[in-house]
Image 1 (cartoon, rainbow, N blue to C red):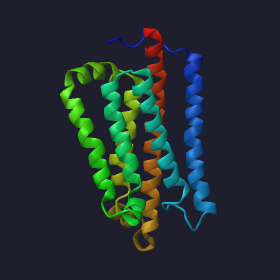
Image 2: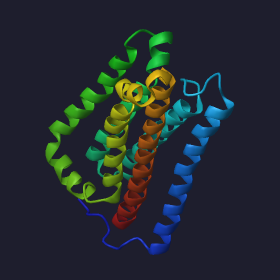
Image 3: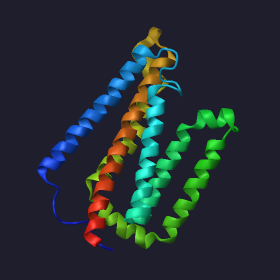
Length: 212
């Protein structure tokens, strides 16, 4: 397997990326603010800006990972596992629609159909996975992806605990505070995963071009 190209990314390129990422994070924060301000009937619901943006972000990540794996053919075992994780998250975000318009617990079945075959494949080709992961684990993309997962699945759950917000707001507590806190932090985490996936795509293109 070809290792990632050794040449560094230019400072100017990194600066442009950093500015774009700052603007993107600022945009989603502003979007959540405008949702609270101007969309009182659907704010922070399944049809609000935050939830729909979560879906869009995860769908975009899936598309990029499919492109990396199927077109660029870079680290196919690692990207399969990443794709399974992101696709399962995407399905999980649709639990309201699936439970209400298809059947209860449909999302759990779909997640199992995505995750179990993918993990089985990785176990079968574990040597290839470990070799690919050696390269991937030393990239900026891996660090960002890890940060996104920790933000979404650990911090947002703890930060959005009902007991925490009851302690903070006391008699003023309503469930809306908890929901807003959890959903906005989740969106931040998914956004970090999106940036990580984009960074992986850019790196994969460098690897792909180096192989030509």
